[in-house]
Amino acid sequence: MGRLLNPDNSAFQVALNSKIYVDKTGLIGYTNSVLNTDQALICNSRPRRFGKSMTANMLTAYYSRGCDSEQMFSKTVIGRDEHFKDHLNRYDVIHFDAQWCMAPAKSADCLVGYIQSSIIEELNREFAGILQQDMESLADALSHINQATGRKFIIIIDEWDVLIRDEAANSSVQEEYINFLRSLFKGTEPTKFLRLAFLTGILPIKKVKTQSALNNFDEFTMLDPGVLAPYIGFTEEEVKVLCGKYNKDFGEVRRWYDGYILDEGHVYNPKAVVSVMLRGNFKNYWSKTGTYESILPLICMDFDGLKAAVIAMLSGACVKVKVTTYQNDMFTFKNKDDVLTALIHLGYLAYHQKSGMAYIPNEEIRTEFEEAIEETKWNEFLEFQRKSEKLLDATLEMDNKTAAEIIEQVHMEFASAIQYNDENSLSCVLTVAYLGAMRYYFIPVREFPTGRGFADYVFIPKPEYVGEIPALVVELKWNKSAGAAIRQVKERNYTQALERYTGNILTVGVNYDKKSKIRECIIEHFVK
Image (cartoon, rainbow, N blue to C red; front, side, top):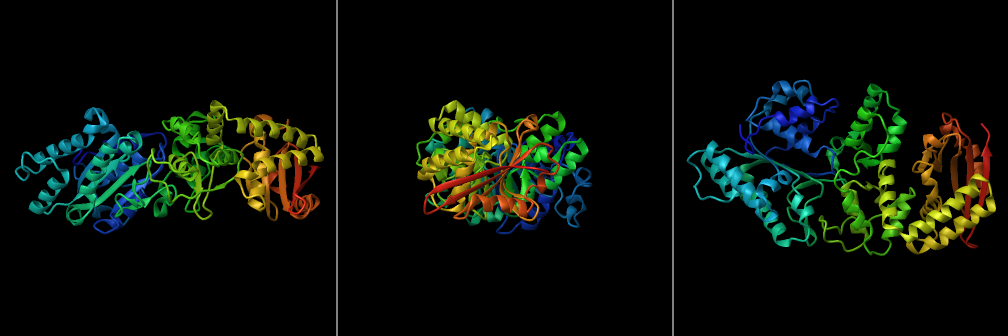
């Protein structure tokens, strides 16, 4: 048993001892299936507090020959697998946390040297007499050990991207680090001494020009999680079980902490969910855990359309994002799409893979964005907010004419950032127009499931405002009439999904005429 070579299972035992532990050992079934194959090089990136370190500790506890973990895993998902014991504690494992190593290394310039010398020192004790005393290359050491003994290694790196994130402008340090990783994982020789590699961090592997620096890795990201989707965060079913156990309103948990859609399944932030279960209050738990400082300079970058996109998403809209140009670092940003892609990896935006759209996932993140924008004092944001407060007043007063005029003003001002005449842009304009409502309402629910169809938007008041302001059921039409929108709400019983809502409800029909470019709005009180 060593520190970095063949560690024990104590780190994972801490997770098992916790008041809330959600079993993610099913992931081991996948890693077992790819051992000693071309798919055995895995990079799984995800935001902070989404279980990166726990995953690394779990894999170490299962594979490391430095411990006996049979009892630890016996009652888990992998413990019921027929191949559970085939790989249990049978392999030489190298596990290090690159971020933790920064402190003893004393500087970023010394990190690679510290990692290599520390592991080689342990290898010399485990494999006495095989390595030359002056050997400095970890890859060379593993190659020599494999040639002499036939032993192969599993390498697990937690926070693999710490230099890519924290030393963004230090090209020489990054180049040395990438070359170190290439020596371990790229080429023919590493296939001889590697059984499995598992890298976890926030960012995907850095690109060199248009290609990944380690293009032989299978990458599982917040953009494309693939088969690892159920093991990134908590699934909806897992959250429902916790809500039942801790007597929490699942609807409230969903509004506050849901929103990440990975492989068509909903994923929740583990840190936030655990905190609300144990502490009880619905508030921000995750968003200030280390990346908040990152979003302020990002959202203030001077790229065309960036502020408009952020304002639209803050209002509840989705925006199209081209995610292929991002270089997977925190230094190289060429356009607004690169910035938005970085925010997806950081967890501040969610991404729907099929539509290619980004959005703010939940109330926790929306309030964090709002605080950041207010801190930067965006004039654009303040102007839309002022108009939208007037729009909300007009809506609550059922002033059809004023409401239509304000929506049209926002449409004209926002048109430069979006395509003017399509249904998605109209929906985007509507959410921006109602930006000021976010003080009183949750993020508007897009295509809310209702009686016999879907309403375009439903604005649900926050609990402290129920009884003071009504819920809003909004239907959009294009080249038809606002009356047709209201009739559709009634005929398809769009208010049925709000039966449990005890307050008043307003139905809002909005139409845009493409030829005359005139907005029409009808607001009616819904009588239950």
